[in-house]
Image 1 (cartoon, rainbow, N blue to C red):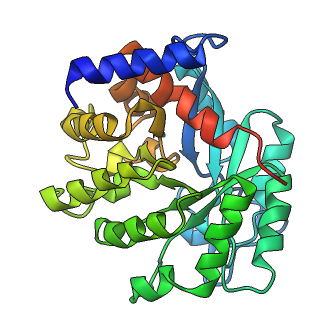
Image 2 (image 1 turned 45 degrees about the vertical axis):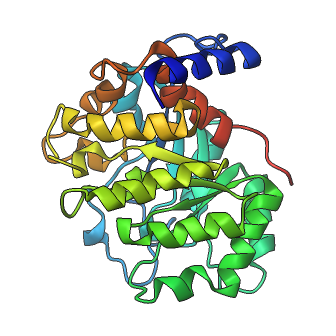
Length: 309
């Protein structure tokens, strides 16, 4: 799509929705769409089987620690992603959501093979959860995993509840995810971290093509996130600019959301300011309207809107 046509569509969308630069929000009222939190209090919040305290790196990342990084950069709301240390026990995330009303939305983890998973999902949505993370872990047969009866229940229930499936996947899973989006067109999908393109090795053109192909599914979104781990893995991360541009052009800014992936973004010499600055300040092809959607509007629409319960 050329720049003139893309700009026209963005302007038209803003006019239709009455959201030129999304009024009602001040510049800087941003949303971080992907953060993990955990506590060193493993007595109250036990770790899942297979995890040890030594696995928690950093040892602690509480909301208060997060706020010290994000609030100076104008980030006021956050989407919490259930941390793997707790697996399907979402208690700490839910407690933090209750402790900070209006600040957090949540993406939970459930066991799709468990009996009553649909009711479990419904109960979590009533507590403010707006997405369910899926990731293959050590699964070798990705097709059998995504095509399982439990996964079918999870995708169908997410559609019924008007919440999202949030895949953490590698590029080789993109064709299978594309097929799932075909099978479940009413299910909202949010792909984490550009499907980790450029994490293990430079992104291949075919992998980029597979990610952009998902744009044909109207309810599919992409997180522009985890810049510390992708591409050159060095601030200011502007080597990721071409991919950001391709994703924006394919999906439109209304289906792209920025995120930090804290606390990992603020470890090993990386910092929060550089994470948000690549979208906010450093890519001159992003319009003010693009930034308003990517830094706030998309995540607000997807993760802070009402669900069906």
